[in-house]
Length: 260
Length: 265
Image (cartoon, rainbow over all chains, first blue to last red; front, top):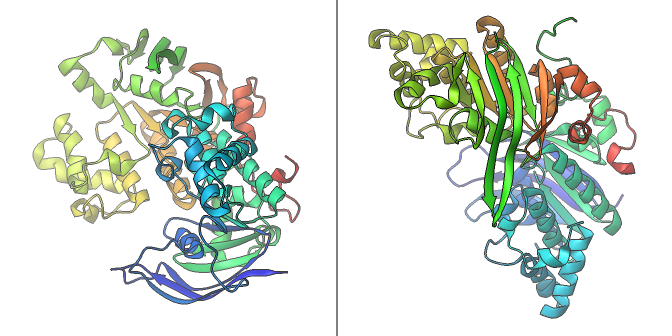
């Protein structure tokens, strides 16, 4: 097991807040794993994602350590890609899709604009955008939510980072598109041997493809372990509650059904 | 007697010079005390249908009968008066409230506008509404921004039932809530239905949620109703590709320490 990052005693408190958003977190990230960070609102899961990515706002109080095996924190955009929940907020509305995907490749891979455009076109093909040549010249508002998220993934991966963080990247999408995007992330991460940190409120979604899960509540790490082990025999009461709250197509309905 | 009958409803939008059918010849009915789950992917037209039903958008063609009246022919004071019978709960509750409002004022508005109870009795009625949705009466004085997302959704439900409606349209009403709270809100909705005989048109992209509360399910795809039937029939034996895709997309909790379903995709 090759540790990519050792998070030790990490606490984060936002400006003006008395209660820490993250409270003494101890967590290892293993190279090449799919780690799911699971929690409800206010659990600190997005703060952790931003902390790992070096994207926390100025003015926060931070203590503890993140020890990277490379000796330095990964550079956002180059070593680490980030996919946000809302692709319409993370894409620039006045730049073409081609320009946005090419930008990262040009800046971080040292390509010319022409090379970067050719690279962007290949990235759009890899994320299975239909008619990628046409989409290169389109603007974000001309695409559906699912296609925009594919573009955001292409842009996040353009500089070939070793780490991809997806922060509720499928939560704003409908279920059919969500399943497609999860399957795409799975495929891309496997192809490139990337480390995936998948932030979600949906324990079932994570249970389908994460190697390891870390359950967060109110800024604390409640439980962590291999996905199958945690799901099959959760140690903590909160993990049990999360599992019990899950509804799928086998959960008994709440209504009384006629004729049953 | 059928509470709601939508017949051959259509709505087109212009998009980039093209005419797109958002709702295409949709017909459906709803009985008193029944929940119809309306499911579809983004862009399937389910929210447009709900908005036409709420008279927030005009229809291009078709008819709606509600409580034995031509619902689309109502206007002005008649429409305002009849709106008390058909209420709506949205996904984004904060967006649906005046952010400076208190909980009491949010509940006082429908009671005053629809003259449900005399002014002197309104505080008592507000306390009763809060109690019915599981909140203490002391919440009346709080700002709507101070309360949690789940509590806010309870207040939205209290507002919806304040006018004693026969139908509530629930548009992704639990989608933004944490799972532990989501179940409690669904339980509250089912209780209110059993107690008051309210019908629900529950619009969602989440079949697992609809399965919990719906007697029947209608599937929309590209503006058309592709399939309607009893809940179990649609989920256990779907006929349309749209229904099959929606069923397949519901995440299953994998509790076996084996490889997940996405591994072999």
